Image (cartoon, rainbow, N blue to C red):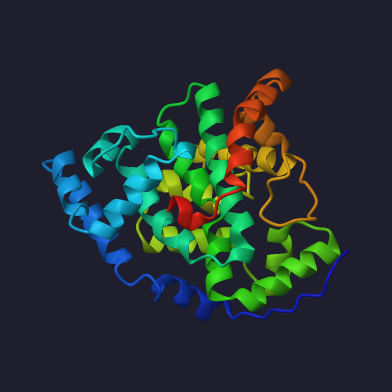
Length: 287
């Protein structure tokens, strides 16, 4: 079912709004400082941990998140420096964003949070199954892959409700309906915010291209893993929106993530217990 294009948000104005994110005024400054420190080879992990620990609220959120059952380190991480050692700089940057962004969701958008967390689990599991390096970076890319949807729910809730309803009516993927009604999609928004907050490309590209398999070659595996994780989770009934059709994986994705049916079943079986337990939680209970 093809709909006439009816743009209800101005792309330029909305992008400026996203880049300013008035509801998170201190976060970009913190990330900017974090990035500057990262460029200095003399900066130690202890120095990073000390700087981040100055923000008690953020420290509390990070430690609660990384020690939660879904992240796989229950009770093991006691300081931000410990988190850095286990997760790495870039993964921790992603968690800084997620710990702030997701707590702004309204209850009606909790399925999006549940979907994002489960895609994070699936991304980690796929990366581990394929023996890929930097597994936690795949997990964070999965966690943040739909950050653009979070922004739409928070900053344009009424307009986005219209998009979701139209997608259900048209029985087509949400990103396609976003393009038709808004003139841009949630992956575009993810790319904008990643660029504004100077996230590394190994996180930015999977977030901005997870509906575009022909991503830059250097990062095609990261895009492929997150995209496959997204598809697997939705096939389990863990989509961010109900009643939307499943998409067939692009042949490029299937080629780049050569999982057998046996491996896929094993991955799903490993995710199901956490998938079910997360349904009973709200974002604030983890963040």
